[in-house]
Length: 357
Image (cartoon, rainbow, N blue to C red):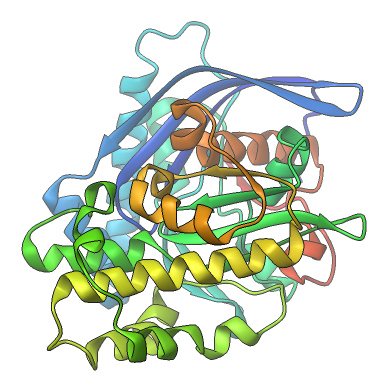
């Protein structure tokens, strides 16, 4: 195992989420002072996926083995080029790049996962130490391999009683009985973006379409009683679950107005999110980040049902918190410190996960 104990790192964090919004990149400085990590963001950027790349990522799950490996290499090359452009005016070069990759397969029940984006290509393009594949070791240790951000919530945002990220899926992390716990709550942008794509929209900006609709009560009742919501944490969601469990319910209401279906999904998400937070955050201070925070209608619904103090930070943290945390995961990996917590993922033990190249 490569171990390079340092108290400070200059890092690039890369994040591509299931909502397919694009690639988030952050350049940050991380420093460990008195066993507490501190951060400062130097620069950040989000690169929207082209139509071609979005299609490639959406269809990756259907590719043959050879086609998938070729795409893995191509996407890694593209990531490396994006980093090179991002760092064109940066001197000296960062200590490391930490890449989340793009999730194609996530089946922890089968000890199976795959993150697209070959880190060998990133390292080859940039000449910078690259850490990737953060989920695999945890899954091999019988964990969920997700969520990974809670260690960052604990080390960088400890002043909050809970941290919620609304992206392709909604996840939460909080301390319960002195231990960090986290889990995926429900789908969000991954479902919403697919719905509005039917009318040529990439997203439902501000929740405008859903706001026009009416709740379809039978659909809401079916969604609210999905078996996943009865499971105890640790638990996680992925595209496979949407395809097998969530989407078939939506499809049964295909004859209804799209605005009504979207409105019902918003109601469902707000109720499920608030129920979880009211149970575990218990009226405390809750940090909300991720692209879904910009959906005014969804956030208004959550505020109606959530008893906690909702805190929405500045735009840079909203957009780049996950990329920032992956930079931290890379630094922890180089230090040989745990970056996957067994209390979060359900693994046999906590571990320092990630392949270093």
